[in-house]
Amino acid sequence: MKTLRALAFVSLLILFSFLVSAHLDSGEDLHKDGYILDFGYSPSQVQVTKPASLLFILVNETTEEPINYSSLFLRISSEKEVVFSGSFLPKNGGVSFVYTFSKPGKYTIDANFINGSETLEKGMYDVSVSGESNLIYYLILGVVLLFLIVSRVFLIKRMKKGTK
Image (cartoon, rainbow, N blue to C red; front, side, top):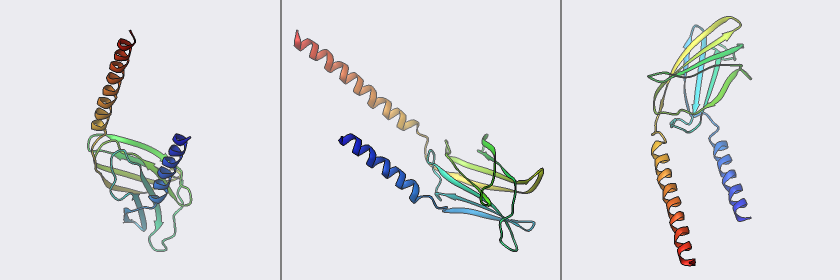
């Protein structure tokens, strides 16, 4: 029963941490040809293997009213390769989604706001991702697990010798 309570408590803590960090901390507005291409992300310090919320909105530069568009094509590229590309349907005037970067480095996000077959505007944004890959943590975890397995085998053999 204690294990179930502890698991529920940890689950609530994780859920609460996601709810608290659900605001956008950083971003960039591009002013182009009568539009404002609004890009925001959270947290402001994007880190490897931690989810980042991304938000894209297209606004009329004069009225600051959202522009209706039919889709948003996104491409996220590292310095070496394209790591994600896809199309999204806007909801309530924008597109938001969560992405987890697997490696540290500088990434470029290309956003194409499309209406029908016409590209209304294109934006390009840079995001720096900090942190180290999880390889070291997996290695430590592997060593600990190996130690536990060897210890258990040793204890079982020792117990068998004691019963003879």
